[in-house]
Length: 124
Image 1 (tube, rainbow, N blue to C red):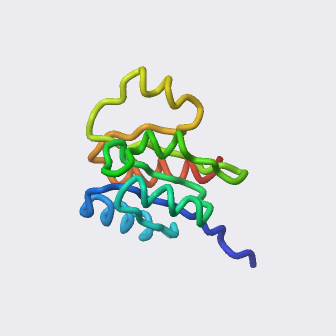
Image 2: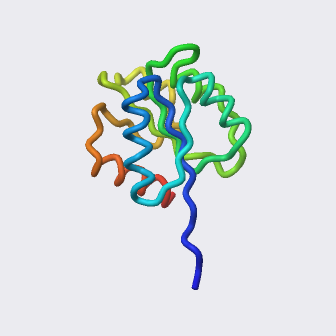
């Protein structure tokens, strides 16, 4: 019998409650989750480990999610990146990040929507 494929997810959000809840939801359905408290920690974690899916809050201290995406030099295959924000994503942001971002999610992300988005990303 084949072992299930382990999907590695990085959740970067400076709000500890949102970060912990997001991680708990994803772990409950079988994903392996690593947490980062801000953009700088996320970027450092990304240099040490490869991930299948990366959820980045747009607004974080030390380095925002946009800056993390622009600074990433992922190992092939690159992770599927999802940006998360309490604010609307404007066209300039979407154009700036282009094909690097798989999906944009608006906070608070309902658990079912979060799980489905990560599942879709993990299948790519």
